[in-house]
Image (cartoon, rainbow, N blue to C red; front, top):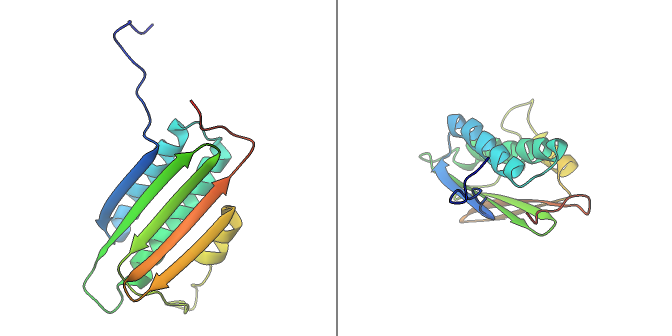
Length: 142
């Protein structure tokens, strides 16, 4: 039983990390993101969808964003508002519609299959992937 002075730990509505765009960081970030989503009370299936779709976007950043340049960074931000989860993955690299190898090209369709909405915005200064889940079946009010 918790004492009167102990309070439940509040889960932040916004979670943000900026890290080097290297594959070793993607595993750490997807696990941290999954913990954040679980702490918000998301059903396990939805946590897995968030985790996998975000991982695919991060893996695309690692594989494609900085191909012709020195390694850059990626930023991952997750927001929980009412019945919506929004995850953005951004970089300062260049978008390419071409797969980097013959087995590539499945990440964006996978993200589109897992999230309710996917937006990819690419400019000369970088790319931002926004993944959104809006569900009437769960509540983020805790």
